[in-house]
Amino acid sequence: MQDNIITTKNFSFFYGNFKALSDISLTVPKNRVTAFIGPSGCGKSTFLRSLNRMNDIIPATRVEGKVTFMNQDIYEKKVDVVHLRRQIGMVFQKSNPFPKSIFENVAYGLRIGGIRNKTELSHIVEHSLKQAALWDEVKDRLNTSAMELSGGQQQRLCIARTLAVRPEVILMDEPASALDPLATQKIEDLIFQLKSDYTIVIVTHNMQQASRVSDITAFFYLGELIEVDHTEKMFTNPGNKRTEDYITGRFG
Image (cartoon, rainbow, N blue to C red; front, side, top):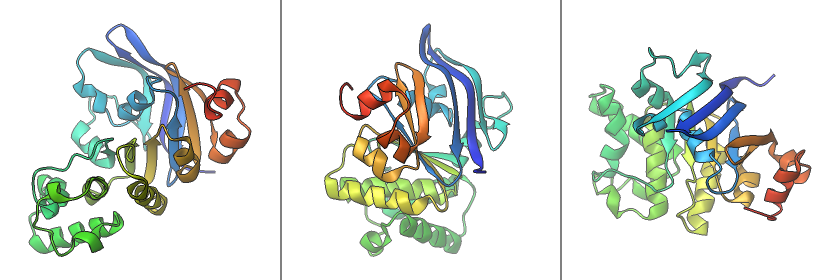
């Protein structure tokens, strides 16, 4: 049986009085890629951000139900949210490198975590950039500004920065939507390689991308989880008419 690293049970999310997510029960299997699909405004990004409490920073929000990560309820008061976000990292739709050198971008979380040894920092930075398939492109200019990199390189740098603190899970919110086809393919190849060491959850509008990179697909519609299954089955023989209509382009 597949180990589940994240489980949600009857999870609902509210912006003020508006119920954005309703009774979501879902499991995320370890070392797999799980894709969230659905039309804009269906709640998939809100749900993704709920998995490491990124929504906490939005005023007047509240949750009901449960999200467990490695059998720990992440919404318990005693949970260290900073530590949680190191374990469940996040890569955003728009790459957000810091206005620092390439090296310092990757080392940032390590320094915050108390690592000061230069040899150790250099080793982890190199390893993370190699994991993010960026090392060969930047190894001779680690001290130049990250802002000089292309959009695709910046996104892979943000992935390297996430990897450096050794998370268990990587959440990706439309990580390739702002990139050209070649850069998108590099991100997709990278996702495929990373799943042997990490659990990945990706939100995507791109049906082809979901079918290419994911093992499990979950379809959201109007704040509800309509269907979740193995990706191949979801795209060839979905169990719900609304899933079929969305995947075949009848709406969305």
